[in-house]
Amino acid sequence: MDPILDVQNLAIRYAGSPVDAVRGVSFTLGRERLGIVGESGSGKSTVGRALLKLLPGAKISADRIRFEDLDLLAQSEAEMLKIRGRRMSMILQDPKFSLNPIHRVGDQVAETYLRHFPASRTVAKAKTLEMLEAVKIRDPERVHDLYPHEISGGMGQRVMIAMMLLADPDLVIADEPTSALDVTVRLQVLNILDGLVRDRGIGLIMISHDLNLVRNFCDRVLIMYAGRVVETLNAADMDKAQHPYTRGLLAAQPRIGGGRKPLAVLDRRPEWKEEAVL
Ligand SMILES: Nc1ncnc2c1ncn2[C@@H]1O[C@H](COP(=O)(O)OP(=O)(O)OP(=O)(O)O)[C@@H](O)[C@H]1O
Image (tube, rainbow, N blue to C red):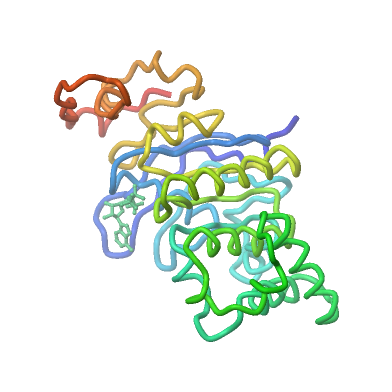
């Protein structure tokens, strides 16, 4: 089957910066869960945003960024407006910043639906309630009428997922979607995302600094360091990692029952910025 997304040799440079924040990034994505992991500043979010062309002023270049039948590099901003939220969506870390505080939660979800489909308000509301139920919100009618400050972080993240689901996208980019949530709620949200990949056959890119989370949740993992992909691994083969940076990340992960030895300190070498092991 053709991949949903095919990225070859992606480079991104922020306006006014003398160096590329990201370079030489290549990967494909099928109907699977792909993790992008790396420490703060490694370029994970920059890659995610570049795919949606949400980096005003930055220079994005690549040999290829193909999303289904589209050459994303060639799409104008007007075309991207039709693609974003409809065919590819992004879920961000904290729903508080994505939901408008002065509108009811349900109205905001319905508004997203109306932006993409010609429908009456009644149909949009019915769709909204259906989607709130699909993300396992128990009392959708009640939640529909709440304001963002009246819902918890976990509930907010489900609302964001419901909002994204309405348009039935093929690609979802989730940027640290659970890092603002506590452990139990995090698992519930991950389960919902997992169900979406399975039931709807979407491709999911999960951006995270948490290697343990990504290795347990994703099918494949790209490890980024200083703007480059240093290694790509099947999540199940993580222990076979070759690159010293990945091995260092693995050694620095705390483990339950792992004894009381101090955690390894992560080694970083300038030459890793130059090479890329794919
Ligand atoms: N708006 C911007 N203007 C200039 N440089 C930026 C901008 N945003 C990010 N950068 C730089 O690009 C590099 C990659 O940042 P990015 O936010 O993609 O990393 P990240 O791996 O997602 O980190 P984090 O986990 O902290 O979000 C960093 O060196 C950062 O300083």
